[in-house]
Length: 441
Image 1: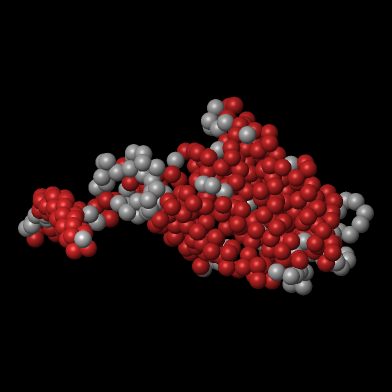
Image 2 (image 1 turned 180 degrees about the vertical axis):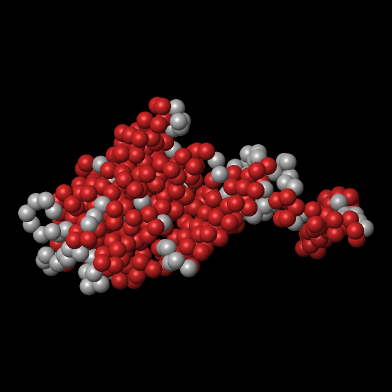
């Protein structure tokens, strides 16, 4: 009986193997024939060389493919495929020069410029949906992730001591937000006059550029005007990097020599308890009054709270260094991907750049003028130069205030005093974004 069962099992196994082999042979033969049909056909050497030459970037620029599509899958004009790319490549070289030779915020400018250079390479479509720049843009800019992470890192690097020791400097950060709301009114007026065609939501998203706060600009654009996200991100980060160029002429035009030489002193020591309570208090107020602003303010205060707690140094170090550095690289490349000629050299982007610089200039001027007004009242005098730091380009604007002040008095150190309105500006721009989202979303 055992022998019979073993023979039966053996027979069944043989039948199973034979069927499996037969079924595997049929598709294999089909694949083989298909492979034979798709075999490479040999070509003359001259034809191979000609095909290679036709695939070069030079030919793509001089004689662009009429069927080439941009990163969004849309048709492009011949200008954008040829001379537009050449112009934008030279623009990126200019940004390299400003970052390396002039030292204008290289941490921001170099990744943005290199991303712009890659985005304007013909044929490769690096900024497309499947190109690595397109992947970076979609994974962190289009969904607000990078702005949130940047705010965590900035919070971990922020010291609220100067603001808490001299609370009235918060008024300078608030005054600088006038550039946002002033530009909103201006953009709506231009739309009503027919010069531009921006909706109220689009005008709100554009106006936030006046705060010189890239993460906040991206955050509000994804909420109110996602179709303008690329242009707004490019404008905002470009002006953040150009703070050392844009701000000094405005600061000098609105102040006299005596005002620039005003020396400020630290009013009092700020305790550790105050620094611990402040971020929690600001977050609670945001939750109660303006919940729309809490994603940004919450991330900012979370980073600062970890820093001030003093018990999670590893986390604090990660936020201040490896995390924010990594995100800055990706964010810069993602923003740079929108420097492609077909997206940058268009009327809408040009109008956004123009309105953005007006907003930023008005914000800078408002902070300086507010400091001058405050000096009309009794009390400790404020150097009006720190009013320009009310825009939330941290810490670039504060460094510019200090640099301009030292041009007139080498012993006049304004950096820590300028950090007061600077961090107030960060909170102010996030609050302004929350107000605009609440009103117009």
